[in-house]
Image (cartoon, one colour):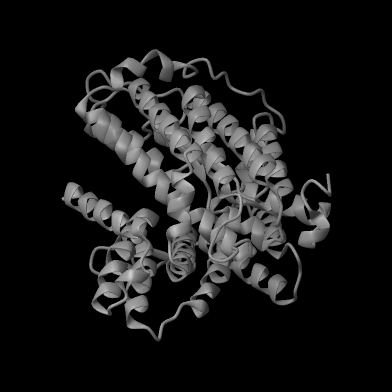
Length: 441
């Protein structure tokens, strides 16, 4: 096992990888509860005619199964400490745009997810996805990593209640005396102390101590049970196959293309960010990128079959990398916890937003360190890099940040007389992104 995952070469061990895998799982465990609530359209009282709610129990099981299988394939095939699960932005698009706005039944929407996953597998096997990622300039890859760091830190501040909505200024400082916010601040302080002291796995231990403090103070309910049976996946299983013939409409074409676009570049951004933080990049290329992308594509197909929206690589994997994870064994551990979660779901209730928020903020700090390696002295590089970084948190979208940066990169480079240095694929992406924004308008 050690030889298979190259423990000695990468300077790691079983204990470190186990803690890393568990840390990643805890950082993204919220998806097990948020995804069923989103796809079941909780909070929407009146649904359009012909639209029904997805079964929350079935989606819970589908979420865990898709995450476990996708993460296991990533760990064993690509050997990266990267976990997968249904994407937050994509599940919101699935529920609120496809189902509510387009009034497309969830069964047909799942067929659209299946179609996008199959297309991705073909693109991956052809090597096109890997070529596109390797064609991205080093400075833009660094900008993507830093931008995602700021983005997830922003999410962490929001989840903690430190940053809240403002009609006048969009955002402003929240109520720092709120109990849940105080608990999150406690978690931030504890995590900072542990990491400053050089404690390996400090992010994980910070989450554990925050959970314990939450239960002591009554802010987090002590679980009333330990084990529960896994809900049946029967209400959603196989519906994507049954309704595959319904996808050949103009609306579904738009839906499938959107699934493709967002997943492609969210995944690319996540892979680059995690690989950069872990030190996997070699000559501006990601080793075994094709295998990592194949794992992502396979997870989407599996997820659509069992009954959930697009499954994608999770930026929360950086929490595990921050805890010392360097091999696919960490992903195997994470996958194992997703399987266990099917039967120990009551225990996951202690992993609240106040617990995960400090981890996201600290990881954001770690990822922002790539800013120092961007060539800021060259204006033609600084402009697209800055726009990439700033747009992600400001537009609340990794894909939008990438799109804006990639549009400005060839423009500034050509104006500087450096057009020949640009890979042809970057020119193609420029056209695609311009058309994307025109389509959005």
